[in-house]
Picture 1 (cartoon, rainbow, N blue to C red):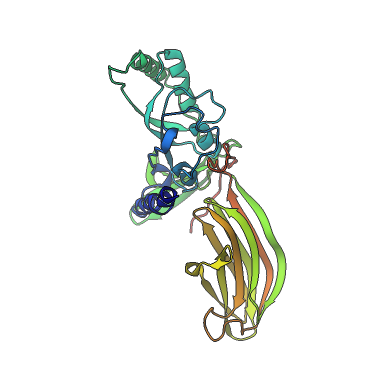
Picture 2 (cartoon, rainbow, N blue to C red):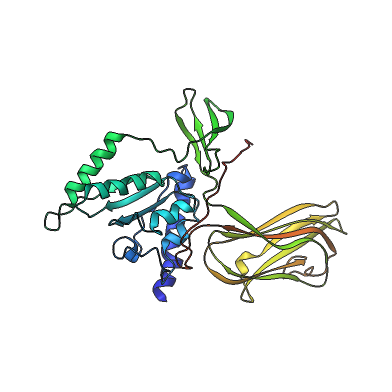
Length: 356
């Protein structure tokens, strides 16, 4: 249990903060990958992705990080119904890196077949490992032959292509480029990138906004409520995990010129103080949006909505009308090894964008 908590609160936090620094430095999200070696998933049992994991692995978390995806994997496993590549590709990933790789079989044909499987299902780079002479049983010769065959075929990866959508011109100081969306066919997740006049990659923009399909589950629909002397709670919403978020949309107006609405989040009935949010409301009224994003497994979440600012004299003392309150749960349909979900659901049909 201590090791699991260490992973959740130290390892993942370190990976997340490193991702954040890379994003702030301007690296495209899709180009940021993390090399994962979680327990037996790298080496050991070939059935590692066919049964639930004992603990939450980095794989479960990284599929929802919004960045690229990387892993290490040895052995011949491409025929397995569920494997590390199938899990990620079914979750919408088409630009993966394998940090360490070797098929470890003396059969050049089977080694080649797995290389083609990697190419066809979203891998764009592999770090080939040369097996030491003391343990080599014809593995290296088979690997070399398979690689030479793959190179000689020189077939393109078509994962991101399949139709050009919008093209928008951008001028930023002395820089001029076009932003284009590609991958508009049903099988594509969609890519937005910036290009030069001759069509080459310019580099300022490169992002895949959606990997997996986002499923929407209504929690409350079109409710009209008046906030006054009570805090109204919604929930509990059970077994939340990374890749999920609660969205609250509503219109609000107060009887006085200025007022406040407080949001509080509770886990198993205990408030999470860091999640308190206060929104200012006026007598004219306007639309509001509140989002609670989940980063790790949470057993039971409730959201409380009240008038006034929590802890202040005006808490639960103001008169506020809320109309068209809608609460929905967003769920990224990714593989979840810990929960025994071995196949995700891809976003399909590409994307559209606006320039602001």
